[in-house]
Image (tube, helix red, strand yellow):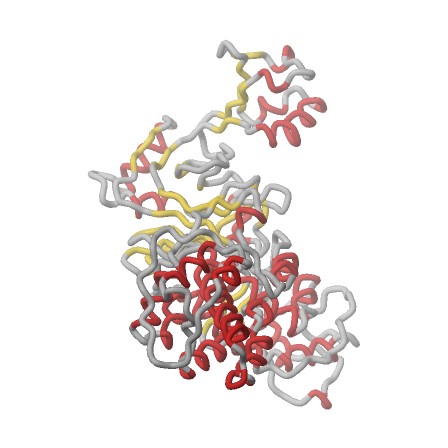
Length: 528
């Protein structure tokens, strides 16, 4: 089974394009002393350090008694090499002044004491910034997205760097600070793979009607060129025809599968859209996903649910093994499923459903205005503030917020036959659905924010297996009673509802539709 491996890593810093960067947050404890060797070193004026307005930088040089520390050529060469190759990890070398540092290095033998001090400070600042970005990303997701509930990642950069410096282990520090998850490694491989593709010069495929096997269509020339470019099909581009032949049909299915589309060989709008992505656009997509994985926690629980929202998938992982996989339905672009890290608490069989404010305003009220029997047909009861049942005909259309709207348990309840609760600030949960046909669709961004699970009773049995007498027979008996029943989940499961749209698998690039349109904007901010 697929295995995922992870590392705890953490922190926060802000990149700046000026030579004198913005302040770095205060380190949480006094750093160990830096062990200096006999290479050339000079005293640094504390005013020069203070001009950077960084308490962290000040504490770093306190550890060396305000002397330069990067006199060793091997250490400098290693750091400059890392910063120059930052793009191999999806980072931007310009963020770390790689070109400017290289100019200093070329003049190292003739630098004045003041210039040597400046060079030393710039190495320290930019290398720590680079390491911080590897730990927790360049940007702060909480400042970007109101619905992203992720724990803040923090670590003591000075302590980390100085210990590696003193032990001569700088050669492994960057690798050790990165996430160890399998998906992150697959993303790094995806970046390497896409860099090996030539520059694409295939014309955009114009919007066409659906193309099926044996059709003849001029658009097939460019479609085949795209399939050849992405290596979903083999052959030569100078012998392509307008016929949708069997070879192209199989290549289209392969392409569709890599992109999370229905692999039926029918070339429709979704397939055309995916084919029209350029190499550069896909590369940018990989880079933003590397950033996201640096935001996510690396301290994964022993047992957990992990949901990839754009992939419409849920994986149950126990002791590093994937033990169950489920298709899911997630929120629409207007009612997005939030990014959450939480802990599963309980299963509720035969749940009631209370209509939430957004659905009340956007769906229920307009429907009730058209037909007062709308709620009764859906087995929803209206209650006033005193808890008394309100006749739909007596419902006050001008004050819909004065009531509670509760749907009785049952197979057709909006939550289906069960839900799973976990602490969060968004009033969302995992649940069954009365729209079970949705799971057959390739685009499953259809809910109001909660995650709907396919075949949920099997999932419930799986996670309640450690509970006494929780067999499928007992679950079916509870369901048949139509009585709302709460059951505590005794086995500890974390929940990770996350968002990533690219990775690789067996050296093949995998992409998913950016259903919340986050990728382009994030890339622009990363390169700002």
